[in-house]
Each structure stands twice: as structure tokens, then as C-alpha cells.
Image 1 (tube, rainbow, N blue to C red):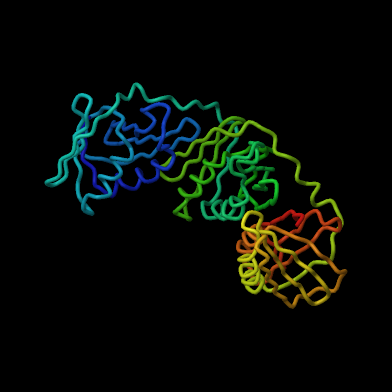
Image 2: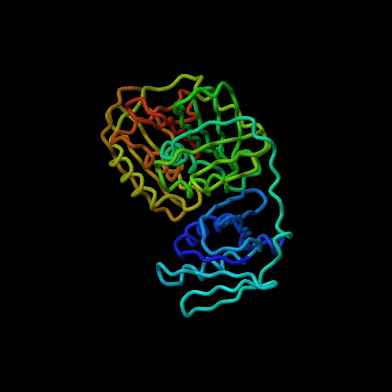
Length: 366
């Protein structure tokens, strides 16, 4: 195996692939990137057995073959070579020689036969979507995903396709985000799948060209997304996502309208003196005013008062300040609308105009 490639053409796919490769591996070969050369194409593959990224790059002066090379070492060498440099890679027994101008490196490798096969089932369902639209959907939901929750179905993102509608939902049990949008074509099916947390974060990172059309294929066990010259694959979470629809089927107090930036700044200041572990703040709501207050075990106190557009009952409710801030920061408009459930079980945060997303934060007891 031998080929010549420009540094930039190798650096970009390596950076995209190395994200899925864990630093600590149970199998040494999983720390490597699989390189396969055939017909003047180099195919690079990285996997952790749950997620896989495959990139295809055009090369010159090549002879066919395959090998696995330490991914991070190869990436670091490419990164440190001068811009625009040509790199010659050649397999010699169990090593890969890397030559560029006056630089010469030799990396110990493992045979390609040792590289594990990524198990995939047949993909029956498919749709296409613009990368910019899909990235926005991820942006509005991923911050609500749980991290290492025992309810493992929360450590991921629900993707619900219902003919021409797409819905993404994420929740960690304390807050929830929902994004809905229309697809450009009829899919003719109804399906719900859960993408794993690491896969969602990697996918978000890969969507850098917002003009690209994505081809999404999935089965009950796997998802495969084609992004230009990249193919992203992941094993799905085998579970049923909880029914969140009931949160909408209840009565609410009148909506509270207030300037987003003012609310964000007030919450940020008050949160400085909140309990470091629970980040709790209390909202005391009265006609035309909202008082945000907190205290902590060191007996520090903070209080801010805001003018609001509200003509309803007196209310007092507490929330995790960071959860409120995350939701408010993800609003696109300058006005935030807070709608609190009559039984004080949840607070909806959205915008005055019809938008594709909604955030729900559960209260806390202080």
C-alpha cells in the first residue's frame, strides 16, 4: 500500500473521524484508523463499535492495500506539517513510513484484518433533509439530553418521523426540549428512534457545511447519515421513549411576557449567590412585576425585580437557574414567554410568534 496525498485533504477527514475514537480502548486496534486504498481512493474508518465514521478521499500515485494506523499520532503529525505539504504514506511490513519534504516518520501499525466489522441491519426507512435545518433542530434540543442517567433512554435524543413532520425531543427528567419542522417530501411512514448521546454530539460537530443535503437511513437498530463524502453510522438506543404528551394536557396560568436579555442578565446575577449544588432561584410573580431571589448556606442573599407584562394570580415557584438560562439562551426572539402550569408542575418557555421549538423546565422545592 502506497499513496501521495495533500496535507489538507488528509487532515480534515482525520479530524472528523478522531472524535469517535476513545482515548482508552478495550481493543488496541480501536485506537487506530483503518486505511484502505483502491482505485485512487483512500477510505478512512474510525469506530468505537457504537458509532462509526467513514470518509473517502481522492489520492494520487497509489497502490492498493490496507492497514490500521494510530489515529491521534497520525492526526498530530499531519497537523504539525506545513500547510499545503504533500505526504507520501507507504506500508512496510507492520509499519507505515510517512515522508513529507525533509520530515520522515515511522508508525507501528496493526493489520487491517484485526479491525472489527461494524454490525448493521438492513435500513428500510429513508428521508433527506438540509444540513442547516437538521443542525438547528439539534442545537435547540441537545443541551437537554441526560448524561449517564440510569434511565438510559434519556441519554440520547428522540427522532420522530410522521410522514412529512419531523420532531426531535430531549430530556434529562428535569427539563425537556421539543423541536418540530416539516420535511420537504412525504416519507409515508411513522417511526420513533432514539439516537445515543455521543452519536448526537458527534453528528452535530460534523454538520459544518449548512448547504449540504443529508440522506438519513435507519432501521430499528441502526442509523446511517450520508454527509457529502462522509458516512456517519450509529447503533440506536433499544428502548421506548416516555410519553411526554401529557405535559400539554393540563391547565395553565396566564402567559408572562418579558424581555429575554433583561431576564437572562437578572438570572445570571442572582445565580451567583445561589446554592452551588442546586442553583435554585425563586420567582415571585405578581401583576406587572417579577421578583427573582435566592440564598445559600453561607447566608448570602440576592434579589432582582423585573417589570413584566402579566395580569393574573400571584405565584411563587422555584427553578434551577441554569436550566432556565439554557432555555432562554436558546430563544431566537427578543421576548421570552413563560407559561406556568396551574398545578405548578412545569413551566413552558417559548416565543411570542409560532416557532418550531418549546422548552419545558420542571420546578424544584427549596
